Image 1 (cartoon, rainbow, N blue to C red):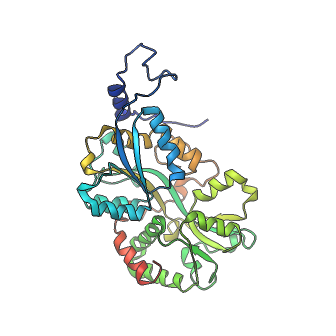
Image 2 (cartoon, one colour):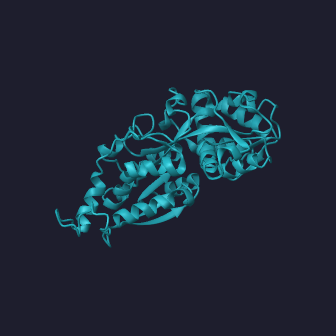
Image 3 (cartoon, rainbow, N blue to C red):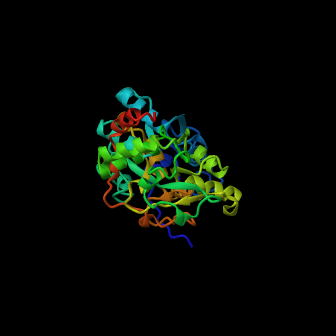
Length: 351
């Protein structure tokens, strides 16, 4: 039996009640009546999504079906959309930014581009997985892992720290995605935990390892699963999603969780913020609240295999407990300096 804590969806309820004209006791307008259609014009907002369309569009469709709120979505790479939002500033057409990682959210927060979130939203997620100032809210957790060829290695044969993969032992066998926001945030975490000099030396050693460059985590997983490369750095949920489709017993690729506290073993979050110029957009607020509602969290657990961040929602089946992976020395709010990380990646020739 799944333990649950149902959030009080204040903003969502307000939008539906106000725009649908709900009447208590009238089954034709009662939102609890499953035959009741959502209001035809319940408002709209524009979403910039740094998360892939295949991952989140079904959730957006579910939200629209339940609320009647129309969502215009611009999809793109999280880092690129973050840079675009910094460039657009207060003139952005975006109302909400849904990010693949905490780093881009922190950069926008530092630029004062987010509106403060209501306390019931900002406080719904425990500290450590969300902003410290209520400017954005964490939505899901994703662990950084090493994916490896199970026909070539056993878990016990592989290094337990990220440094072990750049000491020459894995030259020509590592796949990475340097333009991916999750990889860049992982390098930012490396900088925060061990300093810029150590992080740049690790990148220099990685570059010297004759690595394979990919566009994203999914491509790395496919390459390892097909025996193209022996190892790669990805987020955990890619493996679990594919294993759910084909069966874990049919996966050549396997996952290695590094030591908790190691720079290669961070748990990053996805998250969302409302742009400063959209503070009064009730539809935008309703969507952010929906992301951390029971329905939203269940979607990410059951369909994406990411860790829920709202207390009382069970984790995906088969994943290590979230608390076993955490680094108490890392504050995700410190991952806001993506520009320095990108400059470092460019300096060593990875982007």
